[in-house]
Length: 370
Image 1 (cartoon, rainbow, N blue to C red):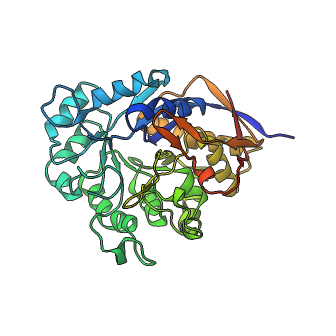
Image 2: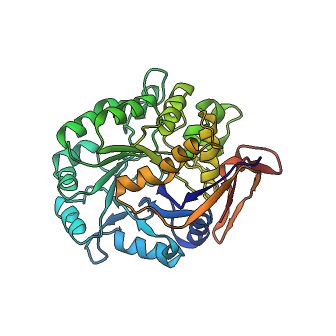
Image 3: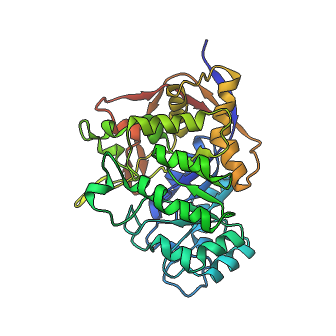
């Protein structure tokens, strides 16, 4: 018998819609896969680093970028959350004004030069000292963190004994938790057992988003044959880390780990200086998450397994961000579906499963019905 189950529309609480001609196709892909609410990342060019359009700073604004998404088809979502990109120009007054006006629900910390579009970032310790994190705590604004240490030597950045994420969760995050015990924090796109252990021990005001690729693959899949379409930041890690993530998202008492795809399109994945970071999973994320849950030992043919899955993609993240449960639904069916290239006005985007195979036709185990 074919497994089929109905789910509320879900929340992707970490996604990249970029800018310009590529946006409408990316937004449509998310709507087509049953997405209700999105948290759209602010690392555009220029970054979304001021709240109001009238603010006298050389950046895009939360107001303006949200409008841009709406005009590209995003008005069909139930909600669009745009975090403020934290820079040297971010002030406590900016946070207070944005929160009181209802414009600011989240802010995003990037490690300086640590990932795509992170050139405007500012050292983590500065925000602890300058009152910005305190303002987030005081005004109920969520801090979304790309949790990797910046400026590390290559020997430390990715090693058997330490890596950039592990260092950050061992050295930076404990100080943050001690300094601001009531601050709501999301460890974005978590990749390590160290990160999982920290989130689970830090208290209910800490949570983490988890991507499909970090639940499915390890660094071996990236390096064997150099599958560059799997290159994302933070990098996929070891089997022990993947096992910890799978256990965390599928635990019956999970209230802290939720879906955030980090879906990041590139029409030119290979660049003159290397490889652009990001995996594209728009249009196919629930199907990939379903495969990952089965890999974690969850039986999606049973009510208990379906409840675990629904909690992960909708309820836990929704509760953390104060989102209502969507009334509309979509259906996951355990039958093959073909993965197709995404054609946009800016060029062609390769979805992750397509990029991981040399076969002309690539399919997944699950399909979506709307």
